[in-house]
Length: 330
Image (cartoon, rainbow, N blue to C red; front, top):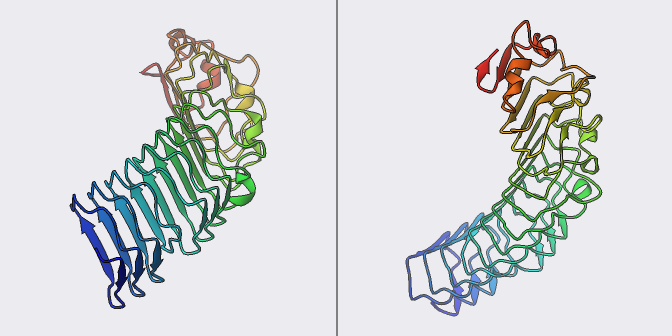
């Protein structure tokens, strides 16, 4: 390709399946360009160093496995990258128009930008980046509503000051990140409505997360991890706003602590699955009167303890409309 590309009328730029292509133009002046897409160019090593594309709305790079970095200055509402050889991102990303950020299958990528200033960003997604160790240290994204990370086997830490910098965050999903041990000490954003954590072996739900202060949180899902939790939930751990709780695969969970649930006046659904050692309810406490669906898969003794009319726990669950214990409808 030419080193300099001056194309004032160009609106869409797409290159694909050019196996011998090694570089893009160094300078790209395309004031009306709205879409930039490069895919399946396995020898491509570099992107334009300078891009003047003020109207760019979508920037997508995929399956360019020799590409090691993105342009320093990207001004686009949507950024997508899927390149196995991709190693680094700009240290500072000032992207005022960026609304969607997606990076996946970049197995050589080790870090995100240190500083990320994206005031209009609403969606942030990272997946299948097995060398990635950290998230942005400072992430200013006051309009971000969805934050998702999955299958990042080397990731150890989350962004700092999430509660102050991600003030509109509604959905936080972290899956299959076995080295993440904790959230920032300042806690999670109080704006959260949905929190999903699964297959994060070193994460244990804790009061430091500040869940009890999240007045908008309605759905909590935790699958796996919590390797030292034998009673759940602790009293005062959860917010009264919860309507759905789903937990599963707590390896040593033995007791459902009713005192930690009894004040959840809006709770409608409680699901506890694949907790093979769960064998008892706490002596003190009750299940909320609002609860309409209870599903528990635990130790086999629970089936008898919850048996209709005669089981020890029957008085505690009789008000619930849908009751399923170890696969049996009670």
